[in-house]
Every structure is written in structure tokens, then in C-alpha cells.
Length: 118
Image 1 (cartoon, rainbow, N blue to C red):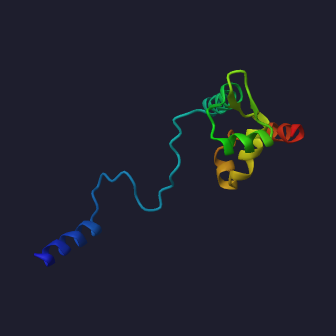
Image 2 (cartoon, rainbow, N blue to C red):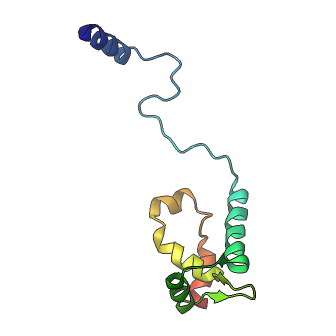
């Protein structure tokens, strides 16, 4: 019984199904359901939410450290994160390959403006 199962597996490896969606040597990462404009709009919306709506009921240690670094509490007692601060924090975390693949995440002109403000 074991020999039969092995023999079948070897045959399947030698002759993969004809309609296989992925073959050896194929490049991935080509599926882009969003346009660059869509990506930019999402990025800007996230920054708007962090800056204007913020985070409700942050734990004390997060609140303390965020306030020390330039965040503020709004009139609804929510912790808000300035745009430039968010961009400055995210920038070093993005590796070169991601930056090349998704240049819209942190456009250089925004980063230079952010750095000069903080």
C-alpha cells in the first residue's frame, strides 16, 4: 500500500496538472486591485483619521509616550497623531524593496516637509 501511494506521488510530481495556475520561475506580486490614486487616497484618509479622530481611551503608558513625542488630546479626550509625526515614525520602518514597490506609501516630498516640521 505504501509503495502504491509513493509511486502515485512521484508520477504526480513528474506530470503536474496541465492547467496549473503557477509554474516554476513565475514572478509574483503583479496583482494590483488598486490604482496609485486609490492607494494615495487611502494613505491620506488614514493620516486624516489619526490626526482628526485619533484613538479613544489609550492606555496610560501609550498616552504618556505619545504626548511626549508631539501627539495631543483633542476636545473629545482622544489621542491624536499629527501627520508629520506619523510619517516620520513610519519612514524608517519601510524597507527599500517595499518603498520601490509601493512608492505612494511615503512620497519623498511629504517626508522632507514632515522632517522640517519636526
